View (cartoon, one colour):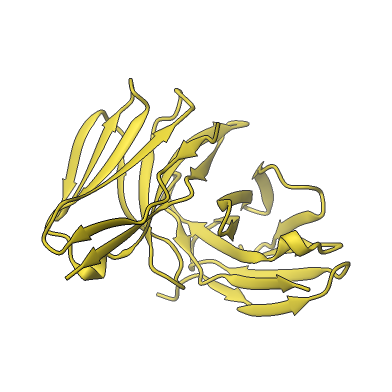
Length: 113
Length: 113
């Protein structure tokens, strides 16, 4: 069974640009969560999608957005990039009703110059 | 005050010793608690979860929960160098009727031969 796949794995952008990250969950998983990981802040919750609906959102500015498609694949977008957006963006999928059992992808490492 | 607090470490223990990792949380309504392990350069993986007060054992790992003290811990017996990683404590929080997982910043464990 394939794991969670995130693309691209690495990317470099400049301030003011926008970026779109993609996540394909484990087959059969309908919940996809996104996290930002930085050395100083740790894992910060961005949002969670289930059946194309955003069910929960973290405390991030509106520049961070996401969506989920009917095949459960998810994308997140960050507009008007800032230096502080440099981070590892992790996607996690879940197939159970029990929250907390997350399966993480390898992440997309974003560097903003 | 952060919702989930952990000592960042590093916690250094000799091979064969017991490693004790601690976590406190602020939301008294939290019901489920998780420990994830993250090797350097890798994504987090779930190693244990606990819902009820007391101890839960799984192989060399024991999770302990004390809801009155809002305290969760993870004990690793017979520590091995392969246990060297960052251990993330996570707490499930219900928001808007849905669950989201809040992570601590993690404790780095170093097991030396």
